[in-house]
Length: 288
Length: 188
Image 1 (cartoon, rainbow over the protein chains, first blue to last red):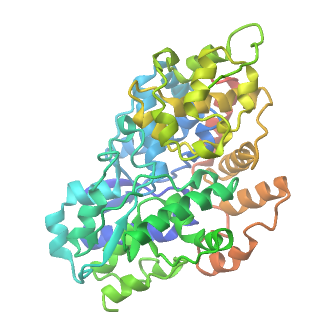
Image 2: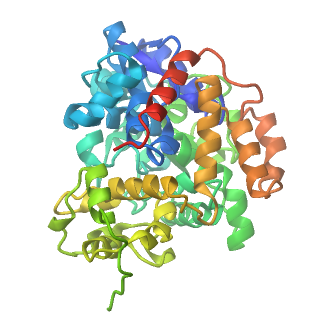
Image 3: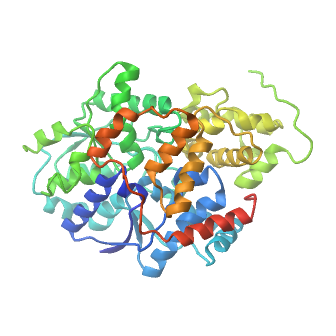
């Protein structure tokens, strides 16, 4: 199993733990991730809010590099995943945009590189049976709220990730390593991450609702596959206290961090020390 | 509910401009309001998604570019995902944003346009986003330098934000993309 790997800008900044845990889990399971040389920013939300052709051209530059490698492109950041899939959708379905992308890149890109999220690779390519066999430490029934947010799921005709209203890919992974995945109402809601710095009040309000729902469902932790969601839900818990007067203490891990612990990878190698809310319930379940 | 719109300025209607840019047909909206019900910021804005569509259908003019949803929209795309007629309302919002930027009418609370410019500035310089520079430049622009400052020591200690600028990107390629898009002028 070999893929072209697109880390995304947050991999070296606010989501180092996402990147570290993805690489550690891939290595442990024998999944080869070959980093795309010279990769560039996908443009994130700033590009699509500014210019449609720019928003398609920036990810297309990386997709072209993956095409030259002859491999599917694996992305671990949900936002980069969404933007890359959108670029494919735009050049395939809208000739006028494709023309502009070609002019910007100086090269024609046909939208043919498959973009995969690492969660899809683990669930669909590697498989749950093999994952179960690789488990060294079970979660011992730890209650986990799997949180998907927006970028993986919407719009469904673009991302095609899973059932957009009731996805279960992460639940299956959690169950495979001995956790109890919860039925809870918050998993496809928006955390407000796009306005994290510009309208922090909105991000804090939406994220607090999600934490509250997970808490009500009895979750010991939330897992996510998106760096924007992780930041909103983890870092912003301090502000929820200031604004709502209620203290939350809900650990929010990347799914790859939780899986990595069950595969026997050290917490440090998974960037667990970088979390703002320490995952006490997880350590208890794993009997650390 | 009564919707009042201002008479649009002469020339191409705002509706036809955004429909053309987003490649979306608003005539298929029959106001079921699933978009408004699913929208996470419906309760926080003056006009929710379905009302924006109705206003466009009725021939609203440039005043719509300054309605709060244009920059409060989180691009969560729940509206598009749930629309029975597959109207890409998130695409309409992006088109309204682009037109409001071009007309100098984008002055929202929180200043997302400034944030986007500072973000893309770092991408232009380094080929990748440089959070620290982008955040400082944005905060300097808004005058709210002290917001979130209390979090920085812990973020630095935990390596939750990069101090040095990113390296390793093909910078010339990104510069070329920006230059080509700019030289083409308006996207459509």
